[in-house]
Image (cartoon, rainbow, N blue to C red; front, side):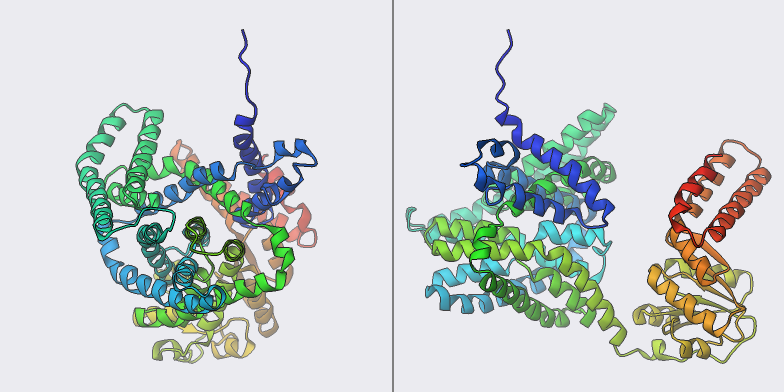
Length: 596
């Protein structure tokens, strides 16, 4: 006998998986952050999007996220898994190194931003408690969006990335006392006494002690036992168990769930299982963060926005600008230079997910007027949606300020007199350093140029012939001795910058040998069209090196392997040169050649 199935119970999981299946590939193809896709999907399929049509068109309920509370409860675990994986990448030692930024920079950022925003909010609500809560809520930033964006840009270990992470970590620590304060001020709840306040603090401290103490005693033996079974399924279950138990223990004690998972991650970072655990958790983190972004988008009430668009946008702009200015000037005493402080300020300027929680709790407690609270929820959501765009803007502003920074004596030193037979290396990052080392190993004199003054100063102190300047400027090229140079190697990673250097060099020296790094086959084709002698596409070269490694490892004679690799490289070069006017056919022809 068949059992009746309630399809509505499976509606939202299926709808989310379908959304992820569409959003991620499409936005990846468009080279746009999937975060924006999830946010847009939440706004479109949420209660303020298509959900408004349900009374007139009941069938729309099947393609909308109607259970906002249930979705947000699941979405919270996206932030939990994110903090857990960040904890795995850290350690107690690294956390101690960051303590000045966490408790110094982070605490001052929250305090100063809350004070400034609270003073302006007081004019609107005319209540000290309400303005203070609004200021504190809006002072917080988005851990769930900022950290993935930094990871996507590979900027987590940069100075701006460390400062942003430190401030966000302090904010996570501050959420629990903020929510307790709201409960203490709640007129609908029994009066909170000093005794209950002290009890709550002791309870939170005990929870942290339990997580740390039991974690140190139990986690390593537990994973030794699980890994001994050599069962991937059991190992995955153990990882999920640790995340859920630590986060729930923290939540029961009044702390942030994400904080409990973060501490568990730090404890596991000191074990030999950290990499395996991180790899196992990544798919869950990605999917649950997607749910979180969808839940944020569901709070985007476009009808309310259209009712007062200028006011909403003005408040959102004011919020980001006020926080950014404060954070920029606060970052300087904590060791951030102007470019790093600018990048940090734009990342932390928008509101965050905990602001949504605090504002919602404050409205439920009757501490903030409902109309003001709903408008602030919309403002916060809008600023969160803008974070990926602000992150890109932050990188551009940072690079612009970097170029305008006063040069150190080492970086400002002019290039030496011309030297016949010298090779010029444009760009001295990881690739440029390797090229310079190989030239030096073979006794070939070289001169490297780079636009990063900090990098130039560091390499100059190490005795490397690196000089600050732009290889796309003809005057600087002449100062570097382009007329006497033997060859030019371009190792920059930005296609437009590479093409600008090639164009400038060809105008100065039509006969010089130019070897350039290329992003892919299409980019290499464009470079051949501009006049380079050799373009090295990263994708093709990587495939050739993999082929060489596997052929030699399986016993093919090395002489035959090297000969065939050189032959295949020449074939690719001929195809790219032949088709420099037909880039649309490159990838097909390259694949056909590989398949022969």
